[in-house]
Length: 264
Image (tube, rainbow, N blue to C red):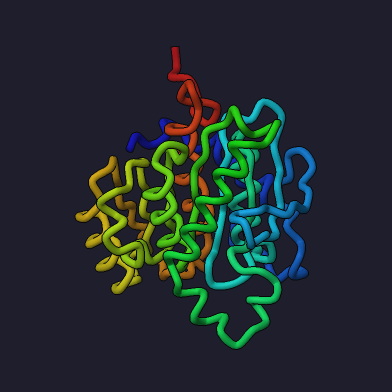
């Protein structure tokens, strides 16, 4: 994966979504308006004949791709960290769908923990979201990628294996790609695995998953980071790398908006 020739363009964009310096303090649970480009709207996404999931959709003008972001372990729409990442993706010209993988009823039931680790079920739901985007009037023309964290990473890779025809890139942030199991060998989408350098278990499972993947793949280690990426600048680096990966694989023409031209 090629790195940027200059980070100054990224610094300006990161400042716009509150990521350039130390991570911001707590916000209200539903505040996901960071770095908004174009209006976000609440949507109900039918992912199969019996299940409709809640999401938050935003499509910037002249979008070059769509990214479905899912956390897996709890509400994706209410996650500040996913909202910040989605904001930067929109700054880069990518549409975003923050998707809750469990229904409101499922989140409140005692079996929620069991469902959060049902990677096959969550993968089917993410695949259903990609299918829904393909049928939308404003999103059908856009290539789809997945951004998953925690168990959402395993679900994203399962979904990519289920829908190889319509998933064009995957990014895992501090996730459990190993939970995708044998589905890893069927993933065709280029996959970026982001893992903290201080996350010993994460390094092991991501290296193992990378060895199993047969698609274009890359493991990027964020020095000193744990799987939470709480340190100053760590989440910003994650967002930068994710943007680069998605722009490279979702845009019809590789974008260079974040790179400065070489000096004359």
